[in-house]
Image (cartoon, rainbow, N blue to C red; front, side):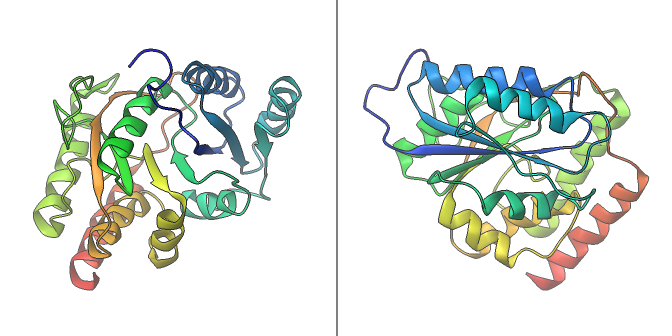
Length: 256
């Protein structure tokens, strides 16, 4: 999708960016986001939720607020590493938009896909649009969507991710192809409702959000995205997270 939307978009889009040691990534991802929103003539803001990064991420965020304006980039730090789910909850206290985008700050999620998320949501009046690495077309259909994929992962990491999604899909039947993804667009009231019902932490959090959304009857669309492994910094996925994920699938299978 090129240029602004054909019809004026009166909505405001709030991006919640959880960060930890993203000093090098933050200026670029903010620039990319600002460029996409301005190109498509969309009202926007970015809420940076930083968990006391020791690398100076907060100082960089403050400088960016001076560049883009404190109404566009809002820094809301926390005292320490308190988890991804609570970062979204914290960020929700400060959003002023009526749609919320959640994504990673490390270039795993490219802002260029956001216009497709918005187009799919507007066309089908969806409650949620989620990015997927595992579809070749959008659901429902969107002409400009291109096949999803993953770049920068070795075979082991790809197999782990595929296996995790296959396990969850088999046991939970969530209706989406990429449960472990974290690039999504929500209506604000929908996100508030789902997040209030969600009890998981860590990587299971994103999966439970989709399972809860289905159980609560919300409509969900999917847009294929290309996921790129982080450029600066280290991946936060480890053995503990994999074990926690498996336990989380079982907990949702028996409890939702």
